[in-house]
Length: 542
Image (cartoon, rainbow, N blue to C red):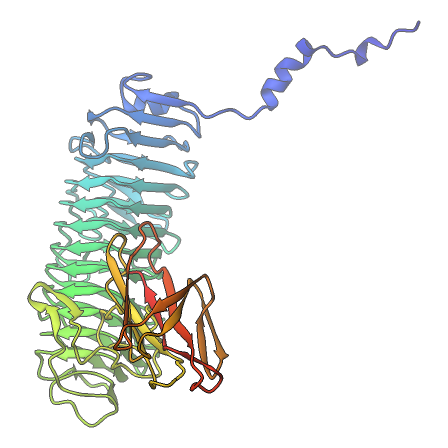
């Protein structure tokens, strides 16, 4: 029997080293102080992809990721886990190569910054708390970045966080007590930066002396600022970048709440401006541009004006609330629609021509379509609660051509729409007793009672209740059959007065925005096709 050539025989022991080299390395978890006595020592031991878990305590050090992709987590959270640079250099430095790095659950303090060569070729002194260098990517979550400040002959920027040609996301962070001329809390240096703030609180930071020096300065960068609270900062609150900014609250900042100049104009949505030093929002475009601004569902109160320069474009103000505040519009036209202006002598001032206000509530309202002058009946304006009371004249009074509200009702005036738990849909069929009426009562909140109330129906009549969790909305028997049938309850009787009250306990654990459709039907020879019906109703969970 012949033997195969020796070179063709490979044992498992021969292959093992090669198999080990080919296999992907698994990520390790290091602990501090278990695996290493300091965070920086753990970083030196770690490989890209590793996780470092840091025990509660104050760690007196400055850390540098050494260009590794790491997850560094304070196991007890920011309240008990602190990185304190002690006034020496930057507390946390991230380099290229750390793509996907993250810090979670730390207080970062005591950073004094360092000289930084920006991607634009300039030099500044910055990055007190965190410095993200060119090409790096970092997520900061549930961190407190506080008490970082710099003293230098160079221009200072990014007392809390300096983003220099990098991508940085801050989620649910608090930035307070930081100082720098530009971007006392957060500063971007480059048009290549992508900076995102979501759910953050920015307060008590000190920016430079110029009107455009801000606590958060993202001018020129892309990214977004969403659901943030920017309050009580020395300087302007926010200079946003190219990306969207919405659902933020600005109050107590010593200059503007928000200030932006953009050739593309600005879109401002669902923000509140509640008493800033120079005003709420200042929006402008360069002289060479010809564009406008859109301000939608925003609140301006406590003398916080809107200042908008359109440069031959249009300033469009839709569904906004002004209380002891007004709008200034310059160098273009201005349109206000579905707005409420109270406690002000003139809704819109400035050089804008023409100025058109329709479907709005304001003092001395003229004859333009939909305008009136009446108390909007806010819930508690002294506490800046601008919800509308149930008897407000501004409910469903907006421009009929406007999109419906989230609950399916006609547009309201003002920034805070009135939520209709129940909306009547029409589509009933009159019978022997005429047209019946169905309405829903109660808020659709888990565990609470709601009721369906049928009235003006025949007395002592057996009815069928149809419920659905989707809309069918098709013609039927001379009316509209509203629910996509999910449940049918037969034989529900009206009383001697033709009424029926059906109490229900609203289920728990249903998602926000969940909807239900309801309608009663019954046999009635007097109806056009032998059946009569109530109008439909739609209920929407907040």
